[in-house]
Length: 145
Image (cartoon, rainbow, N blue to C red; front, side):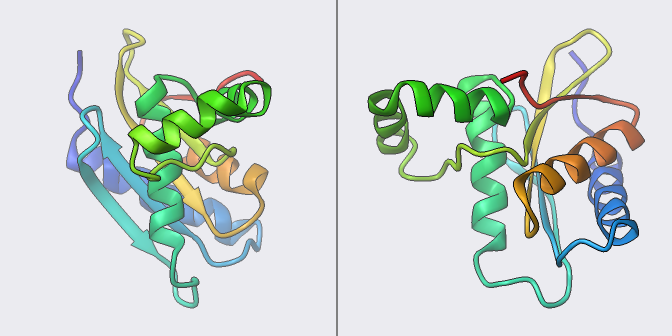
């Protein structure tokens, strides 16, 4: 398994934000976590709202907690709300089960981290996560719901 480097995490953040700016999205916050859930990188654009870090972190953390992209996580929670409530409880409320979170996979397919983006629509947030991960030469796994 490859470790997620600081350089890769910074590329994910900068290129994710660049994608958002080129698409004229609302101000974004982007969180990158390593495979154990530790914060590797974060940035918030000017004029983001107060809780963008918490929401972006919750999207990334949810992906790591379940080992799936946020599209699958959203589907699981919709299909099995009791599981979603239980997961919220065991995660201390620190997961956000909506698109905008993506697992980061290395060339072997191993999970080396996760990204969460918050600020625009969930689909747009997800597009920024994917753009950043691809720019770092890694594979994004958003789920296939």
